[in-house]
Image (cartoon, rainbow, N blue to C red; front, side, top):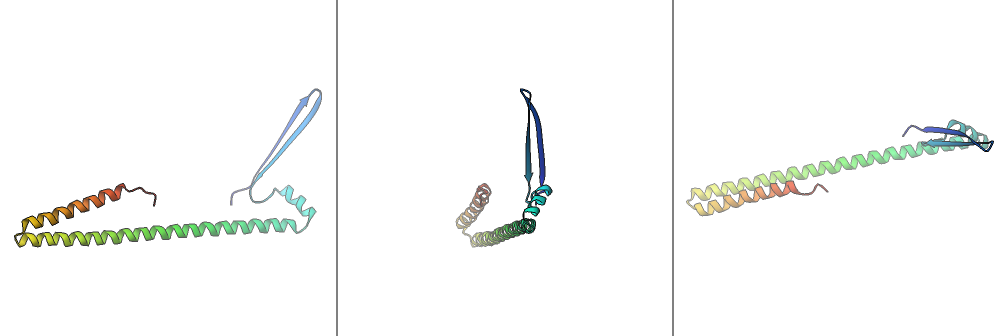
Length: 139
């Protein structure tokens, strides 16, 4: 809750021998000034209590809302991180399997097939990592 701000501006003007007094009163915050609270108390004894209760309820609501938003953002960030870790593990497993296949094909004497499997795996991984880094961060 922000600290209430009170600002009283008074100016005195002289016009053709007449004096004009202008006054401004500015309050920023959930509660009226103490002077206004005193006036409200004179109007109705329960009015000040109602105003304070209303301000407390508003503050409680705002705090609960902000805590829920923070909790939701944290959960989304954790979910995003888990998905990235899972994707990296699956990508690592697939690339290891492709490289193992490439090695096995080379061992069998199928160098052309081994170079195709190995080359496409490397090109595919580079493409995924480069385009993954260039994706917009709007998510």
